[in-house]
Structures are given as C-alpha cells and as structure tokens.
Amino acid sequence: MTTLLHISDTHFGTEQPPVVEALAALAAQLSPDLLVLSGDITQRARLAQFAAARRFVDRLALPFVSIPGNHDLTVLNPLARLLAPYIGYRRAFGDELEPVHESAGLLVQCVKTTRWWRHIEGEVSAAQVERVAARLRGARAEQLRVVVVHQPVHVEGEAEARHLLRGCDAALAHWAEAGADVVLGGHIHLPHVVELTPAGAHGARIVVAQAGTALSSRVRRGAPNSVNVIRHDTASAVRCAIERWDFIGERGEFQRIDSRTFGLQRH
Image (cartoon, rainbow, N blue to C red; front, side, top):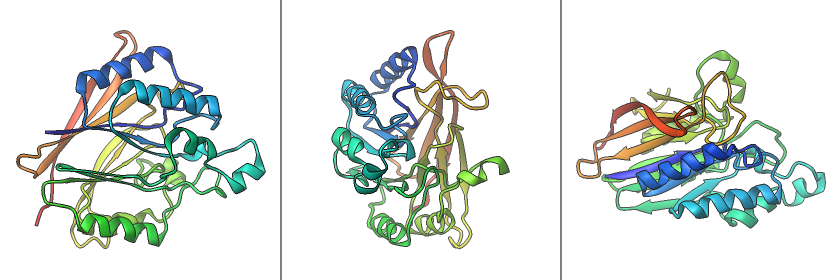
C-alpha cells in the first residue's frame, strides 16, 4: 500500500497552533510515503513565513514535493516580483518549481500554475501540458499517476468558476488520455472529490481531488481545516481510495469523515 498525504493552502502567517499540532500528529500516525504541498504555503511570501513552513515540513520528516501558490510570489516589492518572484519560496524549498517524485508505486508530477504577472488566476501552457503527458505515458502499470496543480481544474458551483485554472480543459483531456489517475489542487479552500470524463479524452476518466486549507484561519463557507489522504493498492494496481480528514476542534484532532474508492484504468 502506498499512502500520500495532500495538504494545501497552509498560509503560514495565519496558521492556528492547535491545528498545526493536530496535523503533525496525523502525519506521525499515517506515516505516508509522500507529503504533497499544493501551494499557498505562506500568506504574504515573507521570509519568516517561509521559514516557519519549512520548519514544519522538516518536523514531519517525510519525503515531500511542493509547488508555489499565488500567495507565495513576492507581492510587496514590484521590482522583486518582476525579477525574482519566487525568491522566498526558492530559499525555503529549493529551485525546482515543478518537482517530480517517482517510486515503485507512485508517479507524482507537479505543475507550476502561478504566473508573476497574474495576481490570483493560474495558467497552464501547452508546453507544460505536453511535458506532463509525455511523462505520464511512460509510467509503469503499478504506479499511481498523480498531477499536482495549485488553482483548481474543477469547481462546484458557478460562484467558483472564476478561479478555474486557465487551460484546464485541454490539460484534463490530455492528461486523462495519457493515463493520469488523479489531479490534486487547492487555492479555493473548498474540498471536494469528483471523477470526470473530460471532453476530448475519448472516454478516459480522471479523478480531481481538491483540498481545503490545512492550517489557516482563512476557512470558507464553514468548511473546516482539512487534508486529503490517498491510498493506492500497489498489489492489485487497479484502485485507489481518497479520504478527506477534517480538523475537529472540540477533539483537537483530524478525523476521517469521507472515503471514496476509484477504479484505475490500465491497459
């Protein structure tokens, strides 16, 4: 069994200490094979916020991949945003903005969807779509194939449509056809999981799993702090389960409140 812990929108600078402790306890309990941070790691891209985030990740002592979100780009210095928009992120998490993790049961490809010239909206280019698809086509049958973005490729309700990743329709179609199993995202602090058959994917299915805010006080619409846990049965390599774990304030811990199992397409 391969286990992946997906956290997003930690927004260090607005983190809540009881939730931080509860998430550290959950990570120790699950001992996942990989930690995925899908952006908005900080609130204002300040060096102190990045340092706090990195201390937290180091405390968990897990292999991890991460991508920057729009909150992780320099905002207070216009010249720095133009010339070195990811300087704080790079200092804390390294120069690789689209890391890849590969193991016997897992292929995780991160995609940088932020752009220095955009304030909130995200974008994925045709070159990025093809680069990810090429790697997916080379995956082994036993690997769970995961793509990580920041802005969502699917939302629930028209009110959130403005947050959709630009280019997401073509991306979903190409990635589904290339064999992607799951796309992980964040940004809107509203968790949901859905299985789609994208237009143009010739019947190929793909699962989209959005995470809520893991640690921040900036919860939305009553959705509590939450994270996703993805479990892949590497023995059969034909299914995975996606679990939603919510922080329960009165108990001071994360609890699993939902689990859905999906069949994987293998040829």
